[in-house]
Every structure is written in C-alpha cells, then in structure tokens.
Image (tube, rainbow, N blue to C red; front, side, top):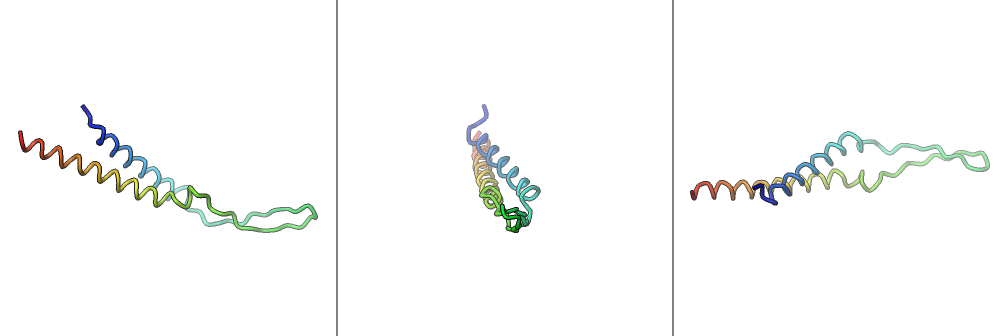
Length: 86
C-alpha cells in the first residue's frame, strides 16, 4: 500500500516543478508598454503591471519543491530503517 505522505510528497514536488517551469518560460517577461487611446484623440502609454501569480510563482515553486523533497526524504529514511529492522 502506498503511504499518504509519499503521495503528498510527490504532489508537492510535481506542483513545484510545474510552477518553476511556468515561471521560467511564460512569466519571464519584462513590463511592456501599452498604448491607450483617450476619447479626445490623444494617446497615453503606460506599463502593464505583473499579476500576482507572475510575482509569486518562482517563490511558491521553490517552497513547494523544498516541501516535497523534505517529505520524500523523511519517508525514504523511515523505509530504510524499517528494512534494517527486519
């Protein structure tokens, strides 16, 4: 039977890796200028702000990967200790 903590570690590790991949591929864009037309015919340029997901994806990915590794490491140590007792 697969232990619940093992599944939880794999889920955290996978989610963290996906966040890190998304951060490095899709969210690594510099703020861009957007042209906005006003009602009087004039145009204004402004920077588009990064979303909350873009700002926190890298940090959340690192935390999730670290949590997954800690959980998987503790389960591996428990498994090795159980094998040595038998």
